[in-house]
Image 1 (cartoon, rainbow, N blue to C red):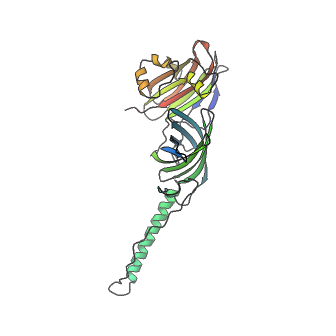
Image 2: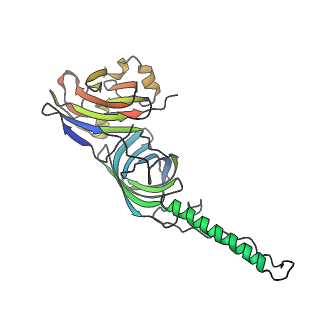
Image 3: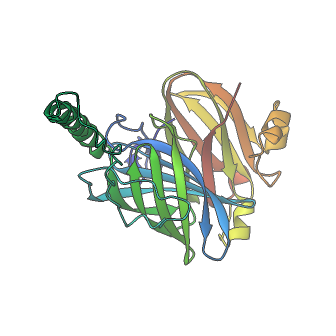
Length: 325
């Protein structure tokens, strides 16, 4: 499941007053793309789990989890510097500030041997060492040229679904992402290894006001690769705990494949596979909220969220790709 832009792209459908939120695929996986997971810590000892996905169009998808609170959002990455050689990963006692980019230290050379060869000149040994040193230097230069193309310093800005902005700095090299992010005025630092060489989106979401008639909240997403097991949630009443008002009290969720309705749910505990939804650990918190758990083949899908009995209010529709063995 992939996404291509930091902001939702809206399109007007055939009938008035209905907008659609379409989430296309991520772009090709080159340059500084990747998927990273880490635990971020603040100087005061606070911590949160962080998941980061970066695509080739310099879009970033960020998910943070602190206790039972999960927040996610999309944003953009701005490259500020490409080192001529890759930065070393800070040691446990070093500086974890991602804005600094230490230069590689020269490798320690073997100890010199003062004994001369049998001819007493020592020139042959010097020439041999010179040839090896030259070859090693050429190899190291080639290696640095290859690695520097995959190394970068950058800043990012992400808007969470709650409307909060998260900003931070990144240093990427050799499959390791060093970063910091500022959330609610607290700065967290993290060291995140790359999980895979290709992008993999865990979750997308959009929030909006659900009206009566043709004022549905419509979201779109694309499945690529092989079949994917997903959970789609329509969240309303539980938004009130985050200060959202007026929250939609009874969201109804529909899933379309093209123009064909393939699944519908009102109140997630009424679903045939409610037990599986509950076991996923991401079931909606309120019984009046809706959820669909389904395995989808590659293709384009649309979610439509309405209010039961013509009710209105703010709601959130989310699509999660879940681990499925």
